[in-house]
Image (cartoon, rainbow, N blue to C red):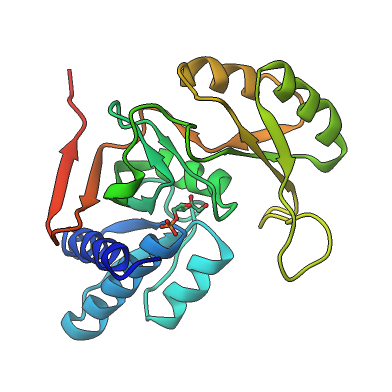
Length: 234
Ligand code: 5RP
């Protein structure tokens, strides 16, 4: 990651941390950008005595939130969140998003769906005209269904790959104990169709397309500014 990219991620992390008010229940995303936001929020907890409750989207964000002093809760205790923030791998002009490079997309989607506001945090390299051109679509699956699902993805024109561990032999195992397929499409011109087909495929638990969920996107620019793109409401 370049210094400019890191600075852009830090800027959006700080911006979203400044949007959190006392008493809020906050969804804590996963990934390097969300981590910077969690750290910035932890700073506010320490310096201002800000009292909030966080709902983490992964073991990684849970451990970081504890480390920086954010009090945690669960969706069982607090099913309705005021706000959730998270990073993304690609964002299109409709604010449809691909997530899941960190294999956390299933929990991330559950938490985002419970929040009144879902703020997506990206640097400008993540903004694309058409989804799926640079990044594969991560899909969480039940292991025994890997081959049928990969065959189905090939029929859909994608090239699927089972995500393999880096410091572990064999597949990446998600926080739910499941496997991740990365499906490279030529491009995803019809995310709704891909969503419908995948969610009707036995063994698919969820995938990284977030459609109609982001209420706003904060884009960290290389010039140090933050652009705020708010979803139009009808
Ligand atoms: C993890 C995610 C991340 O939020 C997404 O991959 C962006 O990561 P980063 O902020 O490190 O670029 O979806 O599952």
